[in-house]
Image 1 (cartoon, rainbow, N blue to C red):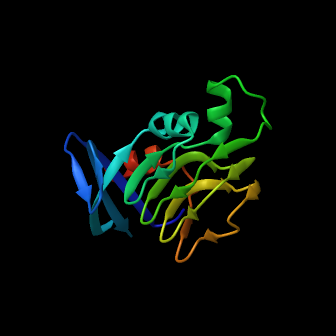
Image 2 (cartoon, rainbow, N blue to C red; image 1 turned 60 degrees about the vertical axis):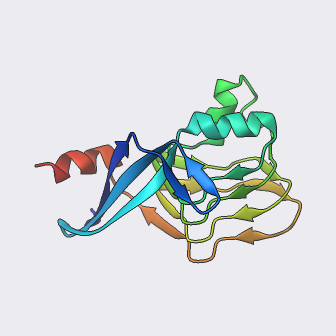
Length: 163
């Protein structure tokens, strides 16, 4: 098991970063070998907040946000779409975002019409799926992205951290 893990506390506090504001925030604490090595505050969005933007054809700006359990497979299921139906995303910017998922972070069968920016993103998951059919601007940014593979769900690690 990895000795690097995170704890997440959802705060009932708004937070802003430049031109983007979030109604809620999280405190993300980072640990290595059972020692706290950092603490960060991020905006907080639910996966449904993001799904709503996809439904409306809006650009998704989740810079400096924490997102739990994002999955286009789940999106399709909640909208009664076929499992392999293409999902059009106007564009996404997720600089310094933290995707946290116990199963897989899933962007399968996505069609991106504009910017796709995953610069300095943390993908905390057992598996990441980026089966993208099309990216019109042909620009995919993954500069300094960190794929943190977990062997146990974050909830298990959180319970271990509390002992």
